[in-house]
Length: 502
RNA sequence: GGGGUGGUAGCUCAGCGGUAGAGCAGCGGACUUUUAAUCCGUUGGUCGUGGGUUCGAUCCCCACCCACCCCA
Image 1 (cartoon, rainbow, N blue to C red):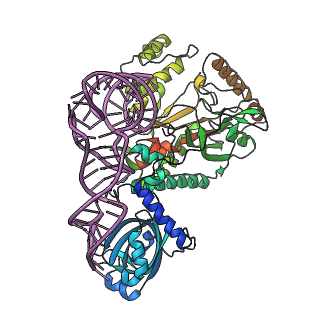
Image 2: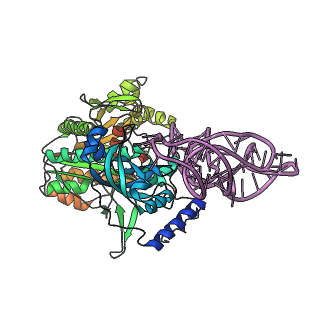
């Protein structure tokens, strides 16, 4: 296997970059070209918050002295006086720069500085005659020379590919992009706080697994050199988190990355963020109430309300989420199927072929019904809906129902037609779990490459006794998509996976 | 994997068989309260890549690459 090569030096040099490199060279000759002694007193947003409401007459006698720093996004030179707009993490502030106030030398230098350069400025707050809070600058420095030109100052980046590949530029140019990732941070903070408030312990479990487990998915393979053994990037943390229940940590959660070796789409990135959590002495009915409360809290953190808008349609997260069995959901959203057809495995196989699927021969009625649900119904579940009563054969880690044969105490949550969460009462019977693993191994041998491996240590852990519990995984990226009104998972992942640049 | 759309100057976009255009950015100049500042002048392109058709291709055809959207 070949090591990745260092990329060749950029080949996209042009006259603008050459011009700027020459300016940088001149800076180097004058002294420290990249100084790090800049200290600021205020952020832009802070200035607007604290002083934006004041009138020119109120500001002037106060002589409020500030030091700001940021990237120059706009520049308007009018002879011996200029305006420039600095952008920092929280917003923008206008500078008023005159030759009289900063001196001839600095002023002449400033006229050569470029959009995208990072500046620091000190001066006194005032309001322009159009009422914009600004800094009357008397000290001005070029802090970091920018060699590459920014995109067109008004339209910014339009090409989605460039926005994803050069997210740093997208973040400079797009307030909307910045806001999406600020909201993402708020959502995750709110979820973490919600969990901590409910006595959950945050933990971190391995990313490198000797046996991939906890989900039906294809893993990424890697290799541990010192141990000379294959390893897998985790597809789910589930089996490790439940080992912690055995260990006596009765409420645990982890917010972290999972890796699945699958295609890319608007809702799939090969690495994605999942929160999984487990609570002893609870069941899947408690879990549904808890999960929706958590999502509601996240929505309020993101949008201030649980009645949100997604792609022009409202989504009501405030009301209790609907709960339907798989069959109820098909009956409701694909009512042309008869009861007899839905109970007929041969019919379902034929029907699935119409959707271009080739159901594996070992699948039984419940799994076929689930496949039909996925084809006909899932995408229609716009309002939050729990689908319940998943068949045992596709739920190898879930507790079987005490009353319904072949059914587990499991749900999946759908919102805007997308799977957002998956949870169940946990299977804590070590002998049942061992039998389920054996069936998975059989399925794998029958050609199901997403079937699970037998995890002997996990069985050993269960044999010490795991308290009855329920647990759930929430797809954080998809939840962030929902709560930031983003159409693609790539819009909520800072550096989404793309094919290598040509 | 299939279908659709797109790839032209650093950026945003026109052009669509006859030697490649605008705005912004850049460069030179004017301008001491601008707001995507304005005004005058000006540099800059293997028109995604490789073939083909044609007297001539950014434009038509084929293949490929990359992206976005839809479907599987």
